[in-house]
Image (cartoon, rainbow, N blue to C red):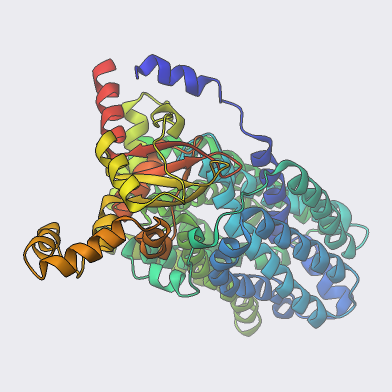
Length: 570
């Protein structure tokens, strides 16, 4: 396949599917929950007779529950599927945000915000996976789109909170419920129905997977770094409204400016920084500058214009850093993206949960200056931690998808560009003898098993056949030796009997029926195919359409051929 044909195929898919935009909109509304309460914190404190530290628990309960819930999102999304998990999250957010707006007690609202956090955890952890999976772009561009949704949500949240909160602190909560109802309708109508996969092919994701993922140094390093810098992030977000001396609308406008800078830099500036200076170096510079901003706020806490200017400027630093660190995690993670996202999010939300309440207590016990100074120290700690562990994460600047995109001059290869369309397959009723004849005739090492509607049932490799026919565990040599030398008549009779049995016997004991049967869609990226093949040491991967029907297959040889043709065509 020539480079020109690759570009032609890619050029027809520049627009994102409607499902991506549905998730994008719902993500904006979900992230409104972070900044929504900022403008109304003083109003809630005054009208419900709560102290600042009690009011900051609205952030703490929300983020603490999110941190724990992140650990189960992978299991839930695996069992239910991406679409159902997103919808469940949306329903929970809409329900408990509305109930929060109808409550009259600070502790009731704090509890309801915790349930809101469960919905947000289900949605947020799955939304990134959904956008990366559904998007027609590569991982890096999908993450940028996701970060844009975060930025818009965080910036629109304070605006909505300021506008509605000027009349009553209740209205912003109810407003999120209404917007989430709209998101529910969009997800129901625009997201594609996920194919029903045979039982044997479903994922065996465990509750322990996120903890196992934390054993990988890149995830642990980025997770702890995010936890430390989130101390500064949420100190600013949760406590700054109390020292600005503005009403709800004024606070909302300040955080709108902050959120707009966050959104703009995350989409337009962070990729340029990453390309020119590298991910790690850019992260460290952004975090160092943010620490300086917090220290300035801690020194000149009583100077209104300094505090406001620092808050708005910090949006640019946080926007860059959020994109850089999220992209790094998705590229560096040696596990499935959903598992990596759950593990990373758990670690970073620990800092998000502790920081708001800690800031309120420090201000009440010492002075309003102390929370920002402590937050700045935590952020500096994240820089030091990243630098100490740099040898474990330096490779993110040369991740697979970035290298591939460079080779093809910015064009993202899709599975459909290099898959084999004329697939040799076999039906469940065939015998092992039929299977062997098929493998020999076409000189292939494995075939997909499909039903009468061409829907995938499983995969059988030549290794599966050997393991089934062998009278005992061993190599091909052991099999031949056993058949022709050891107890000749008995072994040959056993072999003859097995040769004429149904291939379903092999399928029951094959590796792919014990573990997850990995498949691809034709719109999946070249990078994803390489990742699965290399990580799990597969030789072939089936390609399915939206109805789980087999439409193609790729192998390691197809990957090598495609890379060679790209190089020659250049």
